[in-house]
Length: 383
Image 1: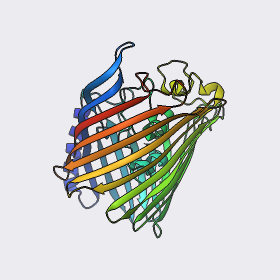
Image 2: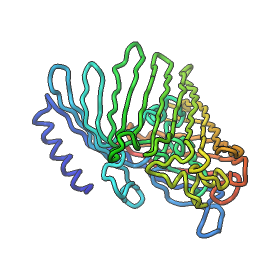
Image 3: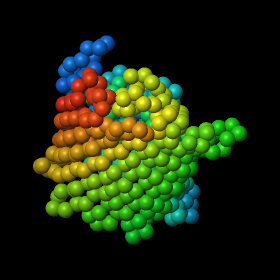
Image 4: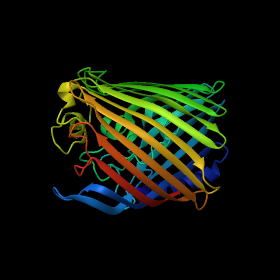
């Protein structure tokens, strides 16, 4: 399948040459791979201890995609984007069911804004991945300190705004983004659940408000996801950053609340009584199917250029999980990341993180320890 897509891209590129005045087509991608070490990892069976291993997508998910546009005249153009994730270490696709698991959209754009139809990202994710209110810009969200059975991701926004809670991407979405007026822009989106005889089942409604002027970037987004019985999972994020004297200070807050008995397409992550399900571990055996769930992340960070070639980010995340009638579990995460530019498209990176769990006995890393220290070194290339 991948070879076919690359062949199509090459043929499309030839077509672009022939029609350069009206259309464009580009093949693009990102490859990210390295080595990660953890002080408290979950090994085979009940064994625990330090662990070092090859890791794909340490900072960002490796992916490739096709995107293009066609000028329709009168200031109107059509856009499309197909994007698929993969594992650099094995070459396997990120998804076993979706060829284009990251994005599959077609849309129109003009002076009135842009509307896209298909599988697309949520506004919550858009704000965070563009570094508006996440100092790491959704970096390090694939890494669970080798603790998928119990602990939050290194950047906990990857747990809260992540595929497990259906908060990163949605199928069957209509997504509108306005033009920018004096730095202000807005967005509205609706995702159809496509449930027979239940128009609102598994649907979602989203909104975005963003302000970008001079040294300020501010934004807020809201997402309301319904299940087939009308129960809700509501997620919102807000925050911003300010640039002064070469330093960028970023702060944000994200919160998710799920009604009792809420069950989306990834219902097992909220309702499973398995000790291998991370939310079950967070809540000391409580299931959101009966108690409801609240999770929040507050973050703050500093970004600066140590040299002309080295960009550094330091960040702190305070993560809290609670269920009705239970005490709150808390995770404190400290992260430092440096990127060294070998060229405009290739970077070496180093990352150090420390996570401390507080609260019930369930608040642990995968190894059952209350803290973990991680170190990663890697290489990233964009094309």
